Amino acid sequence: MKYFQRISDAVLRERLEAFGAVLIEGPKWTGKTTTAQQQASSILRLQDPDKRAENLATAATMPSLLLKGKQPRLIDEWQDAPLLWDAVRIAVDNSGGAPGQYILTGSNTVDRENIFHSGTGRISRMKMYPMSLWESNDSSGEVSLIRLFDDPDYDIDGAAGKLSIPQLINVACRGGWPATLQMPERAKMLVAADYVNTVCETDISSVDKKQRNSKIAKQILRSYARNISTIAKKTSIIADITASGDISISTDTFDDYISALEKLFVIQDIDAWCPSIRSKTAIRSMPKRSFTDPSIAVAAMGVNAEALETQLNTFGFIFEQMCARDLRAYTPGFSSHLSYYRDRYGLEADLVLHLDDGRYALVECKLGSREIDDGAKHLLKIKSLISEYNSKEKQVPLREPDLLIVLTGGDMAYTRPDGVKVVPLSALKD
Image (cartoon, rainbow, N blue to C red):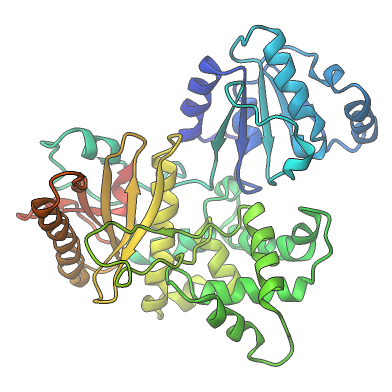
């Protein structure tokens, strides 16, 4: 099968040059093993059925034996034998910290009780998510996100997006799963549905060996999907889940299922950004409900592309999920992350993109062109509030936003007279 270049390729290469081992973690089916194989010289597959029992027995008695092989050595699904973590750490120490020895891949967060040392300084962690539009060849790549930050004179006027709104709907339903890129059209649309089914039927219990009810898991994902890109309260989601009367669930049980879904990298809520420009009581601080890929929401709701073409308001929330996924992919730094801003006065930034070095962008996600002006006004107002705060607070001023961006489902990129960058999501790259 053809290998599609990933942003993670360069990240992994850099980490291997600096650290003895690199852990690639993230959702299943995102291509972690395939990407690691491009740079590995040997591989240990812990889920190979022909060798699984032997490998697990060896890992339990003398794990260092499994580390023998040409380096970089890939240890796939390492979480099946957690003792390998400390074996890798010790091997790196014994080598004097030589870089580029091991690559570990896995889809599940491991119980820390099975690990004796964090691996700090020896094992570098990197996240790998479903493909962005640029990686799946669904973006023209005519606008570079990093260059927007680096070059204030960067001219984006006239850069063209690659997808129409119906095409955006199609790729959102398909998702960023690498295997779908070489499938027939109808087959592509089955992958996300199967992903959700597998998570609910199997993974929700196997992630920490705790039996959970698949029906409850499906209802939680369905309710989450109906509330994506919102700050729906936990009590509201629980009420939605139990509304039919078929399911009863306590707050503790709900939290337990959410924790498992986070370990599986299925749910990826976005935290609030709470600068001091308003009183603490005015700024919303609840997490924004989010999945790691927009196709999970589509599959959990049981809708398809044809239905979403007549429900553009619903797709607007899904579009925001796609924007969040792609922004994460384009900024894979150690501490790069997303947040959001919203206050009780209705002022908001759908996303706040924070880079490693402290720079940040305020982002609005607007599917249609008629919403762009409102989105820009929100971003400019937040910037104005920060400036007002800084005019009064001389001791610890807030950093002003480095970029104001409206991501759209439109055709053309341009810079507004007020400095706000309007960029089609299907024109963006890293």
